[in-house]
Length: 217
Image 1 (tube, rainbow, N blue to C red):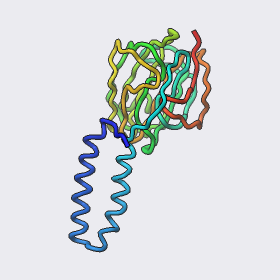
Image 2 (image 1 turned 180 degrees about the horizontal axis):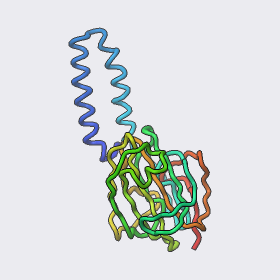
Image 3 (image 1 turned 60 degrees about the vertical axis):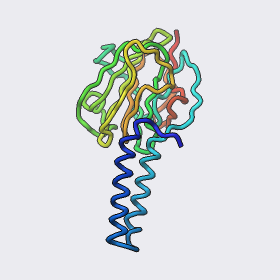
Image 4 (image 1 turned 90 degrees about the vertical axis):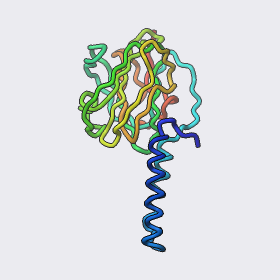
């Protein structure tokens, strides 16, 4: 199983803790040490599972808006996007549990025209105010259809580290990685009002693969 580059520090710490606790359990508890080692081994395995990098067939897209993350669609509504485009937009929010793949991908192809990191709170990720009050990043892409698409990585109650690798002027390719969030969070996508939304609340998404909307030239 291929692991994401963001796993290095976390897995190193988890390995040291597992080794120390397991050794101490065996030394002090002897045969009863399995009561601690077995559940600890399950947690240790989940850390590896969280950082997995699945093989995905990423296609070229022009009009399609692609799910940027694995997760569940929890919100589709008209809102005022007041950071960059400063006008009404359709917000599609996808919640990620700790068991989802947490690679963040571009939802559209085009050019990166804006990026910004915002420090903030750590409200639970499904809270509506988390989009504007939590630690987050904002990226805007001018799509190949000449639309502006804004999307946000949002840290949640558990997730305390979000990273993004893109810079203004970069070429964005729908379905390709631009960042990572650790241990559960949310992704918001802001689309033009005339966008055709093809997902619905409750849908499970596969990042880089599933089409969630379409924008026409």
